[in-house]
Length: 134
Image (cartoon, rainbow, N blue to C red; front, side, top):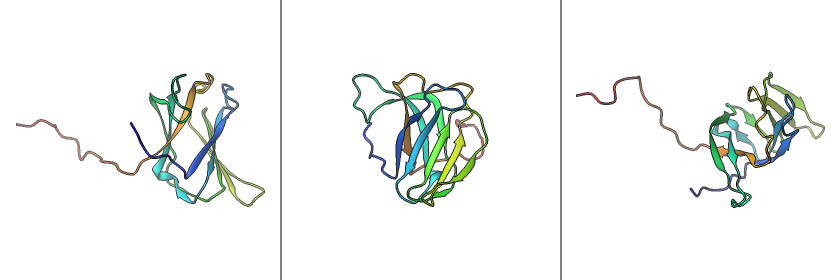
């Protein structure tokens, strides 16, 4: 699948890879955004994949939720459990720390990588009913 490159956010890296309660994804905010359109998947990067490509792994999706973040803010997504908080940075921007609530680390293997995505369209099913009615 070919999709556009995402430029509003940049994955700076995985910090403390494989260390319980410390492992986190560091993301820099490059322009003012509503985080409700963004999320993170976990992918497998093979030797044959270019650096910008990975294959998503099933059942590993994190959605940020709605919030307005400004250019030069930062996001830390800790893979373990915890309570979200906001810190002030020296440059006047913010660091938003949030938690994925996984029971174990995700990125211990270096070929397992975070993948940012942006959702620009969605369809939600209506009230539950049988799909095939005669």
